[in-house]
Image 1 (cartoon, rainbow, N blue to C red):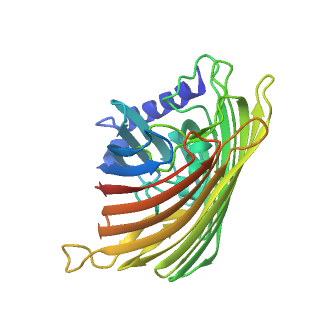
Image 2 (cartoon, rainbow, N blue to C red):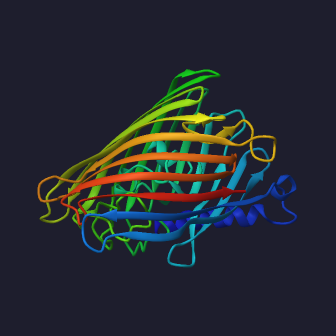
Image 3 (cartoon, one colour):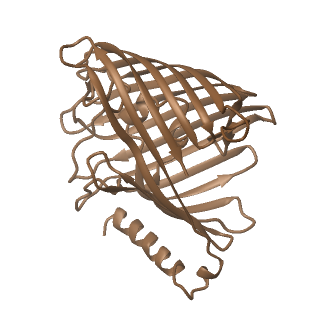
Length: 376
């Protein structure tokens, strides 16, 4: 039985036992149901013929059920309406936290522990899309197990994983190991400083295709990845560094990522990098932070409560470099964003982006992405 099947079977059995109507678990069970919807529209023009974009998409449409059993067990199962139709599993896990312990144990399908922005929910990131390296280096969800240790101003996660459940694993699926730690040297009512680092090693199984690295020109509506190395690697190591500061209603954040890919057969090894820097300010509220990631923004006076909501402005520079030896592709992006948070759960976002690529199918261009999002 593959690692994916073992973990999903384990989660299913735990969920079945705990949902028994007359079982001990059911006596102290809680259940919450919610979801999120994000709808995007993009207008963009590039300097190659027939590469303009005037299109929309439902970026995310998710429903989840989560809750607790007693004081030690927590669960979550979430499904997303995939772009091509049908449903796909995002999160599906059970977490056990022994009483009077700093440790938590998780089994199921969830994200590997990498990157400040990847760990932050898509509801609370500062721009419409995350940093380019997060997709290019495939920081994603996988079936696995992890251990977490958290203190007042630090946290550590380590985990072992199979593949994503949407990936065909075959008789010999790949695997990954990942870990992340963060520390808050300053953590007060008006100031938070975040320092973090993460690592991931992943290896493809013999029945799987080689790894590749690619990225779109910022907007997810874009049909093509304008930089693409093609498939060549059998394994890779990811290293990430993170820093963020929140001071009242002002914040700054940045990440740097390094990836070392090991070529398969006669393919050459390669070293790629990426990262971003941003600064922002929020009027009528402020960004919040919890347990090593950005959390739901605070809106002082939302619509419906004698207020006009909150306005957030952000400027970001993002870069990814996939040029090494025979592999080509570099993408630099400037993003200027404005978000109106009508309430803490309703967001209207507008991002202007300007991209410049080398050795890509589209050399440069610019556009505007709008998003309506809400969660419940």
